[in-house]
Structures are given as C-alpha cells and as structure tokens.
Image (cartoon, rainbow, N blue to C red):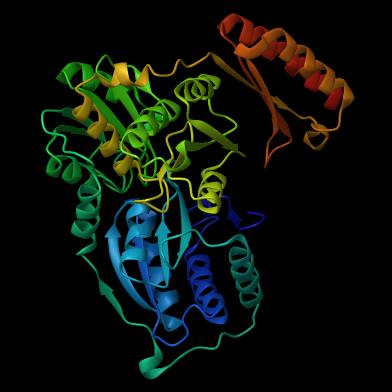
Length: 452
C-alpha cells in the first residue's frame, strides 16, 4: 500500500490491504503515540469508535476495539454513525481519541481507518507519521509494553450517541424546515438512520431512498456519486429538493425541484449568503479549492464575499479555516465544513442548513442556486508523462499562457500533477463548452509533447 496514511486516513481493500492485524496494530500504535505525546497524562484515556455499515467494518471494529483496550484505553462503541458524528462525539464526550471505520464513497470491498484527536479534529500529519513508524517497528517483532489487571481498557456500547448527535444537528439550525418535502438518498450508508431522523425532527416531510444498508450495498448505484435515482425521485414525489450523502455522510450534494443537480460550489454559494445575512460568515470569507468552478469565484466577487483558495482536498480547506478563523469552506464534491458546528465535512448538517435556507426565504433551491452560473468545465487526464516537470517546462508554460490569453477573464486553466499516478490533469473552464473542449485538447497535446 506504500505510505499507509493518505489524505483521509488509511484505506484499502478490506482483508487484503487493510487486515484485522493491521487495524489492531495501528490502534495500539495510536494509543502509544498519543500517550507519549502527553494526551493521556493524568487520567484514564477514552476513545470513541464508530463505523459505516460495510460488512468488513464488523471485524475491523472488533480489531480496533481490541487493540485500544489492550493498550489501556477505555472504548465507547457508538456503532454505525456518520464520520462527522464520531468526530462530534469525540469532542462532546471529552474523549482522547476517535476512530472511524469507513471508506467513504468507495465501493463496498474497500474500508478505511481514520483517527481523530481530542476535540474531534484530524490528527496532525506528524502524529500520523509517528503512528505509522511505531506500527512498522512493532509489526516486525518489537514487543509492546502492555498493561495487565485493572490497567486494561474497558469496552461498552454508547447507544446514546445517536440521539446526542441528532440533537446537536437540530440545535444549531437557524430555523425549522416545516412545509418542505425532501427526498433523502442515504447511499445505504452510515446516515441511513441519522439523516431521516434529523430532517423529520426539523419539521420536513421526508421520502427516503438508499436507506436500507445490508453491509453489501453501500454506495451501490446510489448516493452522492450516483444522483440519477435521487433526481427521478424528487420529480416523481413533487419534492422541494433532494439531498444525497456518500457512504460515511461527510459530504452532501443536492437536487432542485426540477431534478437538476446542485453541486458543492452552488451549495457553498447559497450557504455563504445565508451566513453573511445572519452575521455568521466571519470576515465575509469562504474557503474553497482551486478546482472550484470559476462561476463560483465570479459570483462571490459580485456579492462582495472574499474567496480564499487552497490545494485540492478538504484537509487543506479545513487547515486554512482553522488557521485564519474562517467559518465556511468546502469542495465542489460536496464536502462542506461549517466550522462553528462541525470539525469535518458534515453532509447531514449541510443538507439541513440548505433546507433551512429554502424554508426561510420561501424561494426554490433552483432560484437560490442561480446566484452562480456554472461555467462549462472540461477535465482531461494525460497519462504516461513526467508529472514532476509540470511547473518547470518552458514549452508547457508558453502553451498555458496562450490558452489563458484566448480565454480571457471568462475562462481558466489548471494543470495539476496526480499525487499517485504518472499523469497530469488538464482542467479548462470557458463560457462555451466547445471552446473549453478545444483548449483542453490543445493543452493535453502540449503536455504530451513537453512531458512525454
């Protein structure tokens, strides 16, 4: 698997890449590293452990719980809950560590382990590196220092976490959703119980699809990566809007009453205006990645809202928000972070806030989302090239300059080397789709010529 920790924890095919032995070992390593860092000093440590409904999550959860308890950590098992719920409960319960077992939007055979620090925040990179190093050291034979007797961790189910998290979601809403009919696509995932309960308690009439997880059907033709069923259901039921989550419910995409998709950029635009209206958008600033549609940037400029852009990945968005104290950020893919109420992307919270804005204004989601116009965007992957020379090739720089001159202020070019493969991603936005395709094709040829 190469380096174990990626941008979103450790992830791979369950029982092949990600085994029970690895899950146990990483959990023990995490406990030892946090103990050495002083996190547990002066008290008996506690961890919150949750998972999505994947079949493999059952044995991986058992391994994680065993590892933590064997290292002297008391464990609260919260069961099947969204990633943001585990993060929230880690903070709300004063736990020293949170662990979520999920591979998010990936297909069912995959799974993953994500660790949260005290407060429900993502572990710092240096701690992840240390956990990986300690895990590797002991995997090859170095013995663990193990507690015995009363020193071993105790394990108990914490069923109260479900109601505690739902109450939190309802408690932070600016207004209720009475009068709205909303279709929820739960991706047969971690929010299959939480999201319908939250939307119902908030006053919405709900229709659910993808809400019958059986351990094998997570993300299977449904959820935020497959919107066709949600679009059809919204139109069929005459709903005001639809909300789609992914497997661990840390993201949200939407569908308006006509069945048209409302992506993460549009959701950010709607929420930014709503938050500014109630003085909750600190510094009148929203954070997004460089992959956000140019139409989003132009809309924010027109509305007098500052846009700060980061590298691709919600971790970089969150890092910028925490460093500068911003309240709202996210990605086109639907990871939306409302930092006053969540430490990570929270798809249920995002959907509730979107519904609250529709209810409060009396306007349709289609009308609200029209604050920005999505410019046509073309993405071309150019394989088998030297991605390391993207920023140094004079030939490529000249091609980019010519493309930017042609596009002017209503277009944009982005060349991005893949982080894992020998390819370069060419992204072009333009006012016209044919122009975007033409420019993207020429740039792809230039990348092959310059870097091939």
